[in-house]
Length: 164
Ligand SMILES: [Fe+2]
Ligand SMILES: [Fe+2]
Image (cartoon, rainbow, N blue to C red; front, side):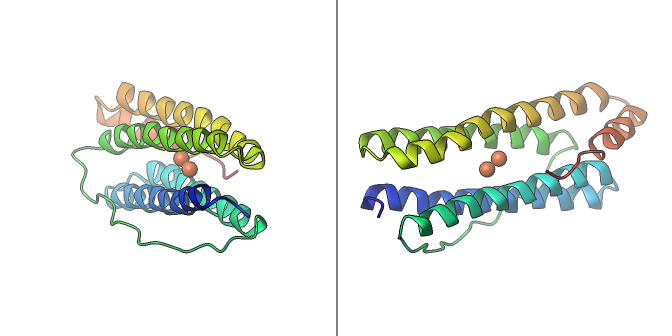
């Protein structure tokens, strides 16, 4: 069994991961509406990854003998100023999620929960990759979005993202 604090914090994180999926899906549909199908695809893949993150925690809580209690997920932003804005917002969001994972890790050490520390190490590593991926995508979009032809090129490039 998890300690009460650890359980509550991990259960909360499922909501944050599913909100992330919801946010990226919202960005995907914004791009699809703008006929930027490559960006839409990139965001759909990202959303799928977030569902996987949520499921990892979901399964872990159950493995520890606790019951997951699903919470309300906030509605994501639906309006964006320009095609660069979602990637900029995504980077900010990933930095925020990194801080949440770090807080979970701190709690796991305070609770002397070694198993959860090991479990969270995957997420610590994953967040480095997440920030790097989004940061690189943002950089590409920023570099190329000055001209319409550049935007199409960036869209083509990010449309090649493979599902993991
Ligand atoms: Fe995540
Ligand atoms: Fe993420």
